[in-house]
Length: 181
Image (tube, rainbow, N blue to C red; front, side, top):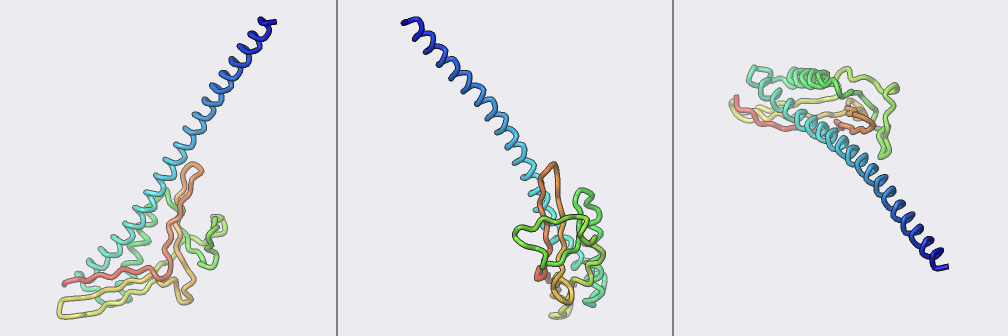
């Protein structure tokens, strides 16, 4: 009888040990998959951050260059800035840019690409004002207005291997720069 109890006890211990080992292997595999997904999300999040920073830089550099080359009219400078932004966005092959109605943006917004309008023109959704503060001193204000009804936004969809991030340029976004010319 002792032999049977010993056998059952050794068998139960061995089965428990095998169960723990197999569960640990599955957990390690799942943890590894989760780590890879987190790395992908971090990478595209960094791409979005770079896009935001570069958008600011393109606008500021366009303002500086525009004023220094004599483009001191708000409408002319606005076209120049918008053209440079559109060119920059079009060079980003891994990111798709669209124009969206902000009423479609919610906290649970998941765009369906076939229903989005490709980004065509930014200049109608922006406004640039140039103030000649003093001789050779200009204050330039660029604002993404969202158009006449303030209802347009630009969305950049950054996707990579089942992970997505959205870059948004919303009405009210503005950049101000003082330029010495």
